[in-house]
Amino acid sequence: MDKETQSELTSLEEKNARIFQVMGSLKLLNHRVKPFVKRLEAISEEDAFACAALNEAFQAMIHDVRFFKAEHKSLVKLDLHIPSVDRFAENADRLFQRKPQEMYTILEMRRISVYIYRMADSMLSQLSAEKNKNEARIHAIHAKNGKYYFNRK
Image 1 (cartoon, helix red, strand yellow):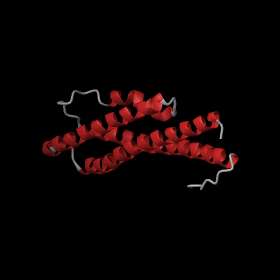
Image 2 (tube, helix red, strand yellow):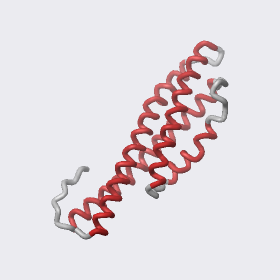
Image 3 (cartoon, rainbow, N blue to C red):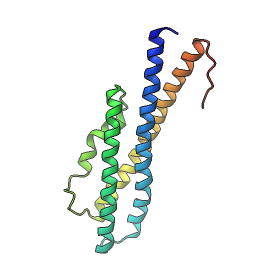
């Protein structure tokens, strides 16, 4: 295998590793958002105690979005641009414009968390498609060079 092919193979494998990391952060976010949305549906807006508890959980979700943004930077460093992922990472701070000590209303938390949940599903599917495309290219490179490569699909 020549050096150019080897470097392309290394690049594709590194991209897949970074995609896997970003997908992990999105799955973590989805794992927290889904039950949070269900909790929001069960609470009335007049229940101040429950609203305060939900605001604490919401702050943890804000932390998870920031973790996703940090993971997204690794994709940008590799010059891997997926439009919906890039757009969400750029605009995520606009979702949380309040100061940490300010409380969100039930309606605001519901709107933001449902948006995050839907976007995370969309981004996961696009990242998975990109990862599968890279894996197909890796498989093609190995097949071209006569190396037996077990297809992981």
